[in-house]
Image 1 (cartoon, protein in one colour):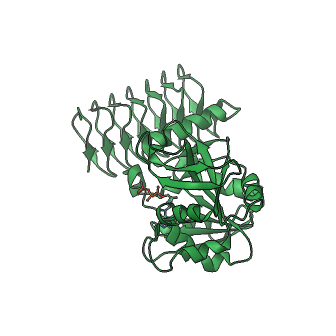
Image 2: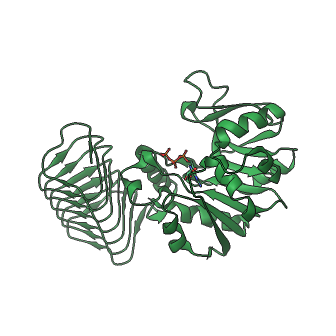
Image 3: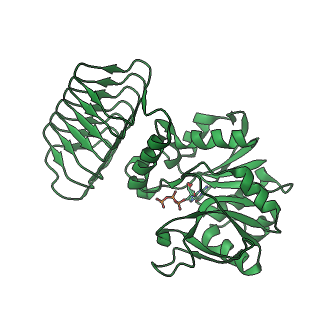
Length: 364
Ligand code: GTP
C-alpha cells in the first residue's frame, strides 16, 4: 500500500518554534513526530510513502533521503502551497491509479489501526473513507453526520459551537480511491475539507470510520505539550533516562519524565512530573522544571524555574529566571538572569530578553 503524508504547511500556530523547523519534526518524547508516523506506517505494511512538501522541503529531503524504515520515499514538491486537496492532486504521479491509498495530515499523532480503516473503505463504494474521532468540542474541526451504515451525509468544516451535526470530527487520516483525482482540479490550491468532502457527502461517496485509539492534533503549543503529557502517561516506563545522563546529588525526579542522552541535572534540582528533556541539555543547580518540553542543547541556569512551557533548541535561561505557563521560547534565545516571563509569552528565535515581561505578548 502507498501513503501520502501532507507535510507542507507553514505551521503558523506553532510559531516561533515552527520558524526554524517544520511542524512534523517537532520532537514528541524526544523523537520527531514524523518518525513516529513512519514507524506505524511501516508496521502496517506500507511500502511507499510520498511526502507532499513545500515549507522547508529541503529539511525533509536531507534528513530522510530516498528511503526510511524500510519504505521507499518520494517527494512531491509544490511550487506554491497547494493546500490539502491540491497537494494530493499534485502527488498523483507518485501514487498512480491502481489501488486505494492512505493520506495523513502530518501534524497528527495517532495510534489508529490503518488496516481497520482500509477494511472499512473496501466494504463500501466510497471514494473517500475518513477516520473519525469523538471529541467534546468539535468547533475547531470538520464534523460529520453519519448514517447507520457509516455513510457521511453531511460534512461541515468548523461549525460554530452548538451547530455541529455530531461530535465526530475529521481526524485527518483518510483512505482515498484513485477516483478522488477526478474531484480535484489540477494546478491550483484546493482544500479537501472545504471543497471536496462536502461534495462527496452530497453524492453519497463519503464514508466514515470511528476509532478510539490515541489521537492528538499538535497544531497549537498547548496541544503540543498535551501530546507529550498523554504519551508520557501511555508509556509503560515512567522514568526514562538516556545514555550518559548525569544526576547530581540532591536532585529529585518526579515521574513521568523522559530525559535524553547527555543531559546534566544539577544539584538539588527538581524535575517532573511531565518533563521531557532533549539531548545534551544542561540544568544547573536548584532548577525547577515541570510539565514542560526542553529542546536539545538548551541551558537552564541555577535557581531558574520553568513551568508549563516549551524551551527551544540551544536557548539559555539565565540564573533565577522564571518562565511561566503557556510560554514558548524559540531557538537560541537568551533570557537574562532574574528575568520573569509571565504566562503565554512567545519569544522569537535568537532574541535576548533583558527585562521582565509582565503580560502576555509576542517578542519579535
Ligand atoms: P497552521 O498555519 O498553524 O494552520 O498550520 P498548517 O499550515 O500546517 O495548516 P493545517 O494545520 O491546516 O495543515 C494540516 C496538514 O496539511 C499539515 O500536516 C500540513 O503540513 C499540511 N498542509 C497544509 N497546507 C499544505 C500545503 O499547501 N501543501 C502541503 N503539501 N501540505 C499542506
